Image (cartoon, rainbow, N blue to C red):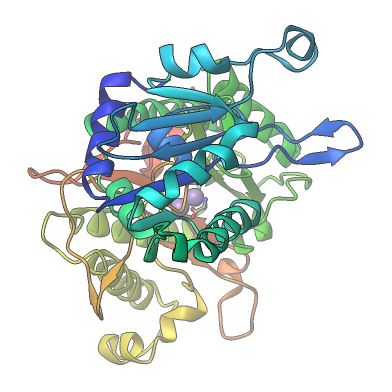
Amino acid sequence: MLNNTALTKRRAEFMGMLCDGIAILTTSKHLTRNRDVFYPFRPDSDFFYLTAFPEPNAAAVFVPGRDKGEYLLFCREKDPEMERWDGRRAGLEGAIEQYGADQAFPIEKLQEVLIELIPEYHNVYSQMGKDSDLDKEILSIISDLRTKSREGTKVPANFVHLDHILHEMRLIKDSEEIRTMRKAAKLAAKGHIRAMQTTRPGMYEYQVQAELEYVFLKGGGLSVAYPSIVAGGPNACILHYIDNNDRLNDGDLLLIDAGVEVDCYASDITRTFPVNGKFTGAQRDVYDVVLNAQVAAIDAVRVDRPVTDYHEVAVRTLAEGMIDIGLLRGDLEELIEKKTYRKFYMHLTGHWLGIDVHDVGDYKIGKQGRSLEPGMIVTVEPGLYIEPCKEVDEKWHNIGIRIEDDVLVRRNGPEVLTVDVPKNTDEIQAIMAD
Ligand code: GLY
Ligand code: MN
Ligand code: MN
């Protein structure tokens, strides 16, 4: 659980940005899987960022400057009978004592409290479009107030979307978040190492997935950050392959893109290694092209450089490498200009990482890539994916390689949080032979 001092500071910063306003957020719903079985609950990311409250059926209301309390949490009340079946609840007391709310109310009282509070403010901040029930409730309160405006009732003048404020905050990780993300990165790295150590020809992809996720769960990562991709041979060329049900063949590569979530913060690692523990010459050639691009791209993750730069560095290094090994022919500048490389490299080189695996925050300010700042965390994940075709030498057919690390932007240069998993071919072979 996140520490309360960091959360109090985060909430104070958030409330400092609300101008004569009330902010209302709700968390995710508990979704039914079938009949009386639910999907595991995972809080809404924005709500969690400000509250760390892990239960469904809750709302947070922020009313800066209000004497009776600025941070109001609405949640389920304690109910011993229901808790015997469905698990413990913080209840109203817990909302205050454990989660730092100034006041707590049963969730059923949300509308009643909002009716009282909303007319006090000029601006209503919410996440319109995210929770249609809440949207309707707010609109109905406002339209009721309008009917009474001749009696002197005040009506807020503006609706403001919260996403911009919140997502700009989430983009720069505070020290508490960095601590959690280091944990997630270290645990994910351990899982990848075990996958390398246990993979053998003849195993099924899901068996390797089990080795990996065993480490995640055993280390306290109760959920994956996204469905694990365990893709042997040609499956590695399917970017979002999650079937994970094929046999692993001697001589093929295995691409694993998997990360664990720790206290709702994601890690995101990809490694590609030979199923039998030894790269072929052709596999090694392509692998080293990707590795060189990844190392060069990580070096471009620097304060004040546009976030778009490291993709450009990766593309250039990949294109140079592909020309060197004979996978592409022609003039480097022209191949880049005409995007010919996209036949083998069709995705971007990374994304923000945080509470969401593809985390929030703008990548561009106007048309320019925004400058990197300390505390941002990105992934760096170039790859090459070679589907069989007659223009390409058969020795490269079905090779799919991606290498992905999580990188913290720091004043003194990039810090690779996922450094524990080997990525040089010799190191990978050594760990697999061990
Ligand atoms: N695992 C999702 C991604 O790498 O973007
Ligand atoms: Mn990624
Ligand atoms: Mn990934």
